[in-house]
Length: 196
Image (cartoon, rainbow, N blue to C red; front, side, top):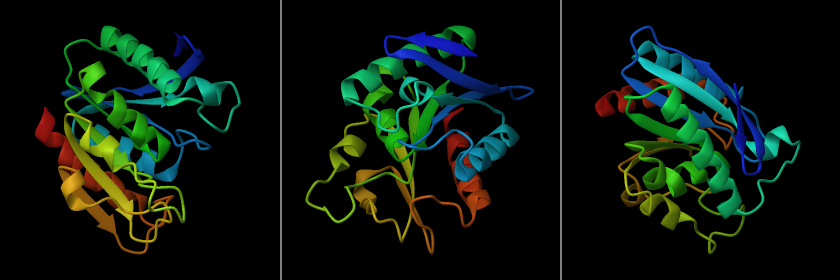
């Protein structure tokens, strides 16, 4: 499904649960796609607990860019996609999330789109080697419960437990969370069942 945003078209892949109780909307990082191993594992596990899953390729990636541009423009496009998804799948509580940059978008827009919770995979706490440039305020400012799943070897850092409703740190995982994606999926699926 294509959604026209103020920043160009975004693409949405929807996997519908047989008897949906929740809509989980996921997106990618800056240079990645919606077929990242952790996002696919989350999709599969979420479908198993009754969540319809929408994976969004944001407009900047559809246009071929590897960087999202300004946060305000990225968030504006995201809000347009969420409005379309809510219209297409009415009545379902929405949990939104993503990996890396997508997790930041989900945190920044949670209140604006009426999400009940956020899933932040590999939240990039700071640029590599620059811990003084913390983005923890985006986690704290989400206005809803946030689940953070990070690897203990992530060069972008690991948020503090007090900055999220739940923090899960996976040993041996880096920023890509690809050593054991099924564990990432199980963690997310178990948590989102509290929001149906």
